[in-house]
Image (cartoon, rainbow over all chains, first blue to last red; front, side):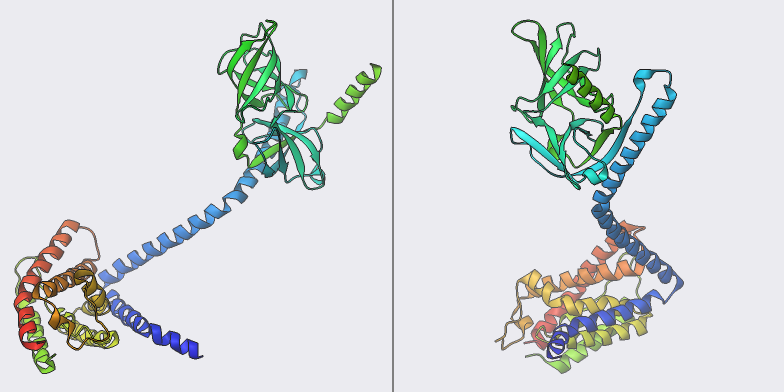
Length: 271
Length: 170
């Protein structure tokens, strides 16, 4: 109570001034229809501006949630697009789509080690399993799921010296093997590229893998050279995905993966 | 020493001058001198703000009643009562000290008092003419009105401030 009185004592001049000023302004504002209309318009505009500013701040803080929703929506639409393409090209066997997309968020990641990994917030309970591909919402390769628990997955990033996947030149379909030598976090290496493939700077390279659909971009060729034995090209590829700025990603599930695994086992068994 | 009775007569004279002369003559649309805020500005700076606010309220009511301001004069005068110490400090770097024996205004040279009065006039005229027009249509005329009226008010206030410093506060 004493503190309250002290506080009132400290601000009473300001309070009295504000009360008197408000009364005078109110009297002036309501004195004629002109002032009433003008001041009403100004206060409404000021109120709208403040309300707009508050709304903008709220909108800014809701962006991460909206981002997650959009990524989930991209996942749904990618699946629908696959089905549509399948229906359109029923006569073309090679365009068959059987991929499902799961939206996920990056929990943690590294880019400065020889073996870099990415932790995602989706696990086996969400239908994630080992060897599923991981891409950005722009359909750029990130890596493959290495292992998962019930709620989390660990992805082997492209920036991992043990990483390898198949790739092909978009322009002419020549295949290559993609790996990372650990030299730059912005580039991966392609090797075993045919001598007839005619690689060029800026040529796009996409993934050729049974774990991912067609059209997943790895990057563009930065430089290339023939190997010492003159039997194949090797190239340096600038990675399309911004690996240091990953936030929302899509995990790609091949719904026929088990069938493929079975097939691989049969072939290996015969050997 | 502040001579209150003389100050009271000065107040009446300023009110008379403003209400019956300056407000009646029409020089130009953009030239409307207002010297009555001097009544508030020249009140002892040492006075507690609450008393200055109440004196300002009284002056505002008188002006609103006499000139039909409907609260316009009161609402534009009241901020002067609250801000005058700050404006005085900003313009002259002077403030009321705890051990002061004489009035602060009496120790200030004429040039500094005019600087303080001029800044307050500018503030008052800006608030008054903006609140009166409630519109930025004709912004150039509004700015011209504020500047010219402030300048003429300072010229008219000059002899009154001299008189105040010579006869009332010293």
